[in-house]
Amino acid sequence: MRILGLDMGSKTIGVALSDPLGWTAQGITTIRRTKKEQDLEEIHKICNEYGVETIVVGLPKNMNGTIGEAGEKALEFSELLKEKTGLPIEMWDERLTTVAAHRAMLEADLSRNKRKKIVDKIAATYILQGYLDKLRLSK
Image (cartoon, rainbow, N blue to C red):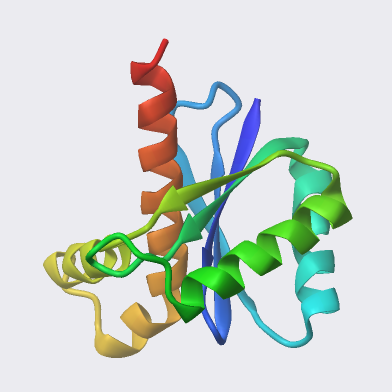
């Protein structure tokens, strides 16, 4: 049971993948965004390569819980992704995941340049791990 986690940014998409048992999340890549069709195709290829069964997309919410422009774009992209892949899509509240990713990288003493390159992948890992933890707790 492989689950894919996505952190949707305006310029990049962070991608994380669960282990086959659905226990842990690992960041696998960052997709540089171009056109929606190409972005969808890149994700579709990853889904096919790893036998993904579910996709978890980070839903950016405002701190008061409302959904703003970025959240609307994530919901719209998720619908296109569902059409493209035929896979179930789960939305996951991603508030503070990027902050947590930056904090973890600072603690690891990564340079600003390295942090910039991998922050979305790390945020996708946080999104997916949160979802996996919820699945385990609900069993």
